[in-house]
Image (cartoon, rainbow, N blue to C red):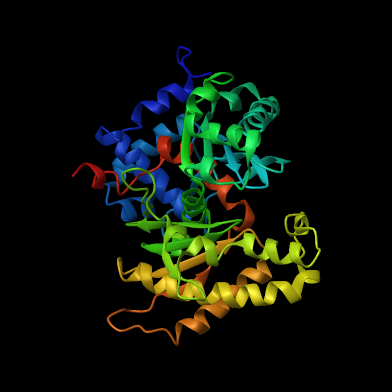
Length: 402
């Protein structure tokens, strides 16, 4: 584990601050491979602007560290056969935890972005003891399924959680006091009780944005705003090809955007475009809302309640999409959430339709597109944090220190 002499993870973690030309160039090449999957060496040189000898040297280093692998040569073209290069899925691993309102997900992610294994627990409210107990037993279970070499390649634990979680409930009495204990929780210290892996804590909406950026349609856009609709709506923003978290990790807190209620009262987007509103409608109709979260998700029996929710949510998202683009001229707005793919597609189509009739004076309307990672985005994004920190290039790294 980290700290052992000659340990792989510790050696690689030496370049975390992106200092040193070679560390930067290694990250650059790994980032290109992560984005484009398989790339020949000559194409890597073209995309990175590095010389072919430099690329060749770095590839040997990365191959020695088992971070990349070479495919079979592609023949049939003029000149030498082209050998595709890609990330080695077994080159690194990370654990991701999503803390949700009704459930927590824990998964093991490999270097290529594939979920190797996933665990789930449900609860009425996410009490600290339950969450950390699940995390401790789950980390042990996930690590037990790895070989000794693979365990050494686990680079950290990422945790995606709503910020100010202690405000996120409707409890009273002793239960409320216990829930408010989240205010004094230090995630890294809690994890250190049972693991020496580094801990990366990120807002759950930002975590979902990381997942879309790395493994979804985010690869198509250099700059985009991202809405993720779970029990509560959140989001993130990507600038210069990297998710921008902000000075305090709270950039892209899109759920806090101001909107207007039916009586003209001031509200937040979280109050008008979240799944907890659909839950409330189901409860009012005498339907157990847990049906929304059962896997695989099937909402076909809920159509009469889902349809009006889609209409109202789409109107709010159309207004919110223009609001975010009044600050930054985003190429696109991506929308995803913890619901079935057909609901996501219908919601985005409706947003596109409502956007046509919005007041767009002084604005360039963005493309509104469907996100593709889905209900697992927050856990996958959380797990991507340690991998990104250790191996990939942050193109916004200098913005916070200027």
